[in-house]
Length: 137
Image 1 (cartoon, rainbow, N blue to C red):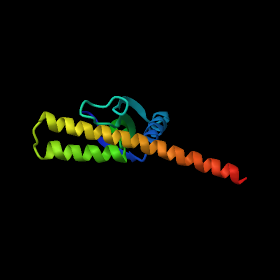
Image 2 (image 1 turned 180 degrees about the vertical axis):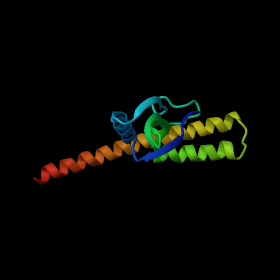
Image 3 (image 1 turned 30 degrees about the vertical axis):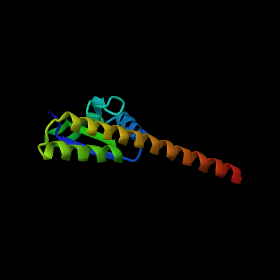
C-alpha cells in the first residue's frame, strides 16, 4: 500500500460513477495510476465499486510532490451492502462458511439489480417529464 489517503464518493446512480470517473481522469492536475472496475467485474463475493488510484499534487515547503490517493466511487446501494458485509464478516469474526458467503453474494446481486432498476426508473421519469414539457408547448 503506497497511497497516503483514501476518499469514498457516494453517488445516487451507476452512470454517475462513470461520469465522475471520466471527469477525474480528464483533470490535468491528476495522474491516473490504476483503475479497478468492480462494477463491470464484481469480486467473487459480489463486491461492486469503482476504484481509482490517482497521484495528486501536494505543495510542501521544498516544492510540489505527487502523492497517491485511492478513490472509491459507489452508489448508495453498493455502500449499504459493502458496509454491512464488512460488519458481518470481519467485525464479528464470522467464519468463512459457504452458506454465509453464498447469502452475502446473493444479497450483493439483489442490490446490484435494484441499482440498475432505480437508474432505469430515473431515466423513464426523465423521459416522461421531457415528453410532458414538449406536449405543453
